[in-house]
Length: 309
Ligand SMILES: Cc1cc2nc3c(=O)[nH]c(=O)nc-3n(C[C@H](O)[C@H](O)[C@H](O)COP(=O)(O)OP(=O)(O)OC[C@H]3O[C@@H](n4cnc5c(N)ncnc54)[C@H](O)[C@@H]3O)c2cc1C
Image (tube, rainbow, N blue to C red; front, side, top):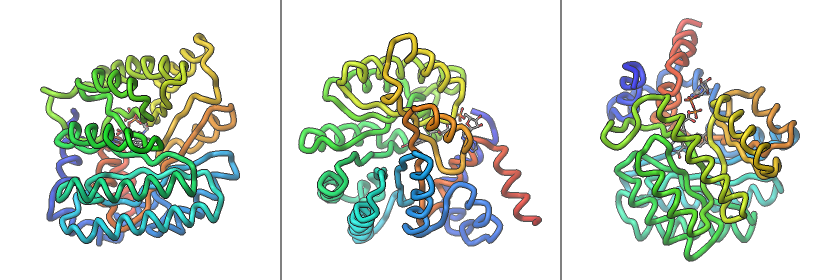
């Protein structure tokens, strides 16, 4: 892992910086590159624009590691209202959330009840999937167990898996067996070389290896798979694989983040692949934004430019 990436990921977890940095104007301005605004309406307006381009979206209300159990109730309530609003607008929008935003650190039972309410409501009103983000490795096992339990109760739930973890190959196989909905990403957290690939080349190779296993299963209609990546080499090699294996174009799904590779998003949607854009909104953007900077430390120049403009 590069030095700048290590520093930025450390900053994302630093408590003092989490409190201070979000009030700095130039950072607030720079964040706009990655999110349309802090309010749900900002996200809905952006989703309407994507919809006109044939691009469906996924919404995340930013937040993680809440420390007061009451906050989890509010987060749940906000998502339930959001589902109603999406249903009214009749837009193709899914939801993705972090379990620690619902109170996973405080009560697994209450988190389960809250997530269940959101998933049932989404099934009833939207008929689509609610995704569980994957957080740092301290949560991997617990999150997978949580997913298996909820999946046995209600089927419209999806899980994110990280290709940088050694364990993911085994997780992929087990989750295919239960017909999971899987979003494969590279992974955004600071992990030790004892449990995760450290070099980009190795992460990329593992990503492609896992993607092919997932595509095989999706080709047999055992699972739904979505590839959460902006990596054009990976995207092209999956497109190439799908052509060679007669994998249906309209089932090959890519997901990207709002503000990154906009032209590529339009290009893929225009060529008939499923291209879903993840739109984040909310006030608690600091740790999430620092992880975006860590993914591409060149983004820091953009922040500095805003400081002087
Ligand atoms: C839909 C979606 C959901 C995600 N959910 C999770 C999750 O639940 N858990 C988790 O750990 N991670 C999640 N991630 C983040 C993911 O793990 C990676 O950190 C992130 O996608 C960057 O990896 P990459 O595959 O784009 O490849 P990279 O090799 O990092 O990037 C490839 C190219 O994409 C561009 N790019 C990538 N990131 C940025 C950026 N921040 N700013 C500007 N350009 C960039 C650059 O041109 C770069 O060269 C998610 C990502 C997406 C797209």
